[in-house]
Image (cartoon, rainbow, N blue to C red; front, side):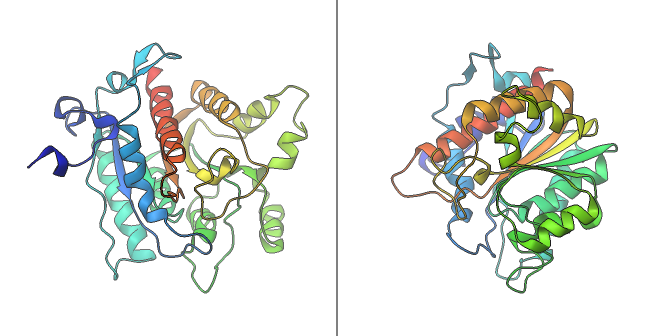
Length: 300
């Protein structure tokens, strides 16, 4: 096999540091896209992110480490295959089984989507394996519709499907929802940290006072599902459903660092990047986000 045809590994790591047996971190690309409702292209996100990661520096100046060494390597699995018959519940089951298998091997799993629907299988696999777990959603949208456009497995219904199986969810950055979602949050008393409250410093006068409020709402173990539209579209414009009023790089990274210091992040997914031709900074930024978060998880 020529190098041109070789599978892409996260950071471009050679076999010594990307083999599944030794690596404590494992990445599953899940290029699933079936229900995107505005901009398309999320299925292209995983490959774009992996390609961009090959241009990241391996050394992280904040942690003073080469991050892949902290986890004894980072394995990148072949992308999951979603045939025309593997949709909705079947796609969720495929992701669930794939993630569960890696957790059972003692791996910290990172799932890269694809549309947000991928988070159902990935998060519930962790819910089955870890007790005292919160599912933390960083997102512009509540994703709590019971169904959208006739599909209960729509990306707009991701958190509803998760909530049916695991009720302890915490939402951060929300700035777009329908009336029914707002009512559901109030009825079920879901911990939802709206963007306007965070930016209005409802949780304290300090710039990052909201960090403590969110972390206090979480159990000891945390599964993180990160929708790329949590970021402001001025930073990440390659989105299917961009929403103004989002978050910047520094405030997001500061929160993730504090989160991993005070809680045990057991796994995460990143989803909804829809690459734009000839615009490379979104996938590079998301690759760096994944790299940083793996470092934060393992530096402890």
